[in-house]
Image 1 (tube, helix red, strand yellow):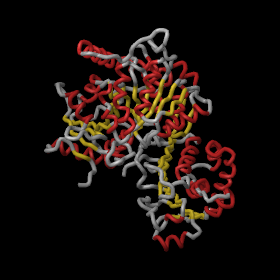
Image 2 (spheres, rainbow over the protein chains, first blue to last red):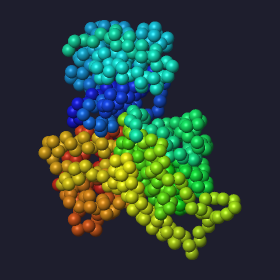
Image 3 (cartoon, each protein chain N blue to C red):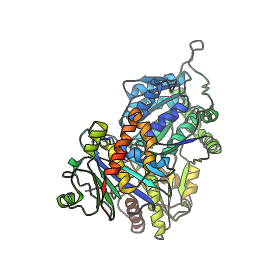
Image 4 (cartoon, each protein chain N blue to C red):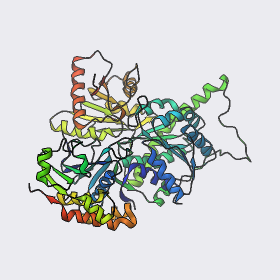
Length: 190
Length: 389
């Protein structure tokens, strides 16, 4: 498919209520704060708590993002919920040379064996981090940190302002969770 | 100074409505417009917008409340989508016939059945003849800019008509994107206070929307039509003044590589995806451009004829079906150019119904198929893109 050059496309997989859309929004807002072009949106339709959902981010350095269709051939896939791996083909359409950032207790090698993933993997136990830092099992902001580690799509410090706007008093804790994930995410060499 | 923020377009609409110092919002939430109404309710509840928020029990009531509010001289805003717009239907005619300057954003949505909350232009087409000024938008910036312009157009004494600003449901309403927000003072400068000439006032009673027997109905309707036609010049004037102040210019017909021999037509936010397809096809050596209507009512006949007269082929994509008839926008486009000595051949498609995406390669397929039909001819009035039969 033809596309804009200098653009990175990220697809998030989560469950309704896990905050995939919020993560997508935070990354877009961080990129916009860096004076780049970005767009974020949910998989369209009624909200269904617990059901597998997607969210999308496009970040472009050179020109405003024009395409508004859902992302079917992402450069990056982020998986918020390890329970989705057996039931959703999260790798669908992932570009050659792309990367998947997965919340899991397992190693990349174990995932590869179990699901046959062919592209690079970045793994982190975001459930543990979220439980320890946030006290709740909501991994969306944690996984933003993992995404930044794996891709460098935005700078960690660019997240501070959007997190503050979104979470107010809880912003620091969410940033700390993202930071922990940034430190702990294991990224496969290319 | 304007400030830039990454925000969902729906929320941005509410923020901009607040910048216009709207007096009354009467609205009922419906997907995909809900966030507009929710955020407005929030702004009013937080004291950030000093307005009456009327939480009505249906869209029919929403528009009815807007009638009263606008007739009293209050700056009036509402928003709806799909089935909600349909439920308003009969009241829409009253708003325009009574010359009430209401501004409404419509997050365009498909119509039931089967139930669909997703986007297309079925709802727009069903309200084509309601006498409202109607503006299409393609990205978030265009939406918020045109909401500001819509108030100035609607409330202009030479116009006094309601205005719909259409934004595609989800593809625009639910997008978070970078947007430039003007400051409150800049909007105040651009948008003078609403000065409705005959506001309802118990001290000076008037009758509005009265009984219209055959002796007067034709004249009333003609006066309304002449008035809507005349609004055209004011719309251009407002867009020019907006450009002078804010540096972004809107036109009744927008083109992208408009001098190409083959032109693609699409309405609303899909045009930006189509532009990417145009870029890619041009790179491959095809002489292709894009044309879109920004202004749907009043229809910009002259500008549209001018925009397409040198093209050989015009490939239209409607996001709505007119059952048993031609695709609605294609039909108007054909009628507009039929008597012209120089005009392109028109090949029509319907696509993007009920939230079905048309990707970049989809537009490329449409163009190639359109060229093939133009060469070989077809038994069909139009083709429906990507349908499984």
